[in-house]
Image 1 (cartoon, one colour):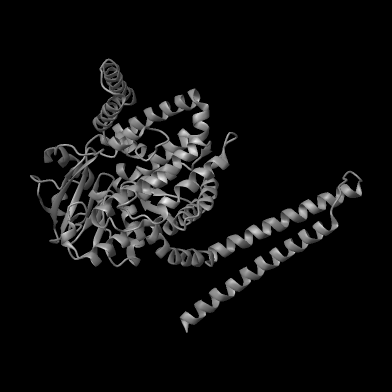
Image 2 (cartoon, rainbow, N blue to C red):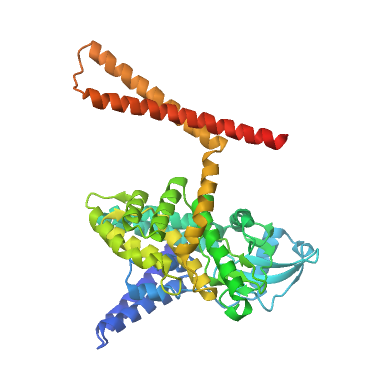
Length: 501
């Protein structure tokens, strides 16, 4: 399969090159040729299928990789294909649920699929218990095609890294590809997508206006879920909701994403308008959880600090936090990057979504970082895509909303959640273990120094005042840490005792 897909990709690349040669012989201006080239790239990616559509969507958030004309064109990428007859999908139903699958599903509207994409087709169904639901069925053989595409792209990535070592030093091609492959796991296994949905639903419990459809049945190639009420946020129309309703649901959508990024650290990576449904009662649903992103605690905290500094109009702070998220290469120009960010941030802090795309501003930092020799964490492009998608969705409903203002409003709640996490038993236990390890290491090093001194093998000079201050500071730090751990532990026990009285 990999060899066959390699031939398909080679043919697509050859057609792009032939088109480029043809454009070079025309009298069109450079700008016209750029737009034609970008359109050809988009059409090629759409023709290659779902995996390359996702790659193109991520590239649309990487101005450090592709031109602005290509970014604009890739923003129009879509993964829609003509509906296939139900007979194509019926064998998948039988293979996943057995010959008696009709005992579960009483009625299927096979003539009018709800959605049709290159990965799956979705039908409105009625279950045996009378409930209405959405049935998602994977296209036969599509998983093996996508896995073959991944294998081909891995090889291409290794070749590019070898040919362009300086580029790879800043971008880390292999890591970026692996992050994309992992993010797409739920697209190929609906059991993974079902778990993503259940996690997303738990994270939405604190938001009155948001829901995630209930998972009713899931296998690797079949997903049955509750129907999302309403219609796409693109189609709902501003007149369907009052101004207060529009702003409230838009605020909840963006606040939810912030909490996913910084507290839950698992987020919907594809919240474009087709995946955000809004009902006329002012409630919203997030669907299609096949593609998600995950960040660790350290990266999420640094990202929160970056965006918080941007919202507070602190360019230097935003630049410093961004650099900490990645890695400065030997040729990094930190001062130049800081200057870039300082000039950018004031335009972001007070703008509404109608005036400025906060997500695109975020991806602009990617371009600045790459240009200045700073490697960005490979998950950041996925997160940038997610943020830009959600901004685009909210812009359909409430373009006057300010993403920076929503962040400022939600920051207190986010910090409270993070503080509670720090006071959890697991976190305190980890802190105690780290302190013990540091103590053991210090004692071992001290014994080594004393032993060498006894043998007259070590000589060093010290500033007695500096040493005294340093020692005093270390003791104070250790005592403070132990005291804090003890106090926090006492508070948690007191809280638990109070609950059980």
